[in-house]
Length: 183
Image (tube, rainbow, N blue to C red; front, side, top):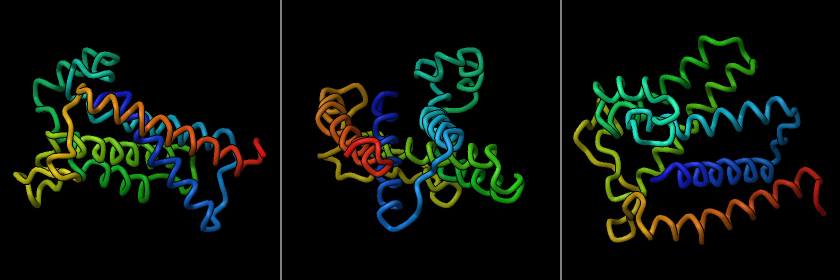
């Protein structure tokens, strides 16, 4: 999936989750700093797994690191395993000061990484070894093969234009309504 697709899918999943939580009675974050931390963390985490591909959006932003890192790590391996965000969640839970912005940032990055993996599971490639070390050779995809698409394909662009952009727009409208910005 392209960087645009990952960001739009991640924002859909995040906004949808926030709206569901709000509907269930959980309060929306009101601090601008908390909202900024969540947004930056999730979007960074959404792009981060592709650091192992030096031609990816994030790979181009951190070119030297990506080139060296990709020499040791194949694409859609270590950075796409569920183990990595689980380690981050655990680290944030046990090692960080409770209720700090840095703890929230690490949670957000880990959540963004899982969102990225969900996006890659929509593609024909899926993710081999997602449940590493339990099933290192199993390819995981969440759609039947006839519904999956190739990265940069026309189908992916249609998915972005006709599904992700409208659903994000609708979720933003609902969130603005929940915050009382629009009637």
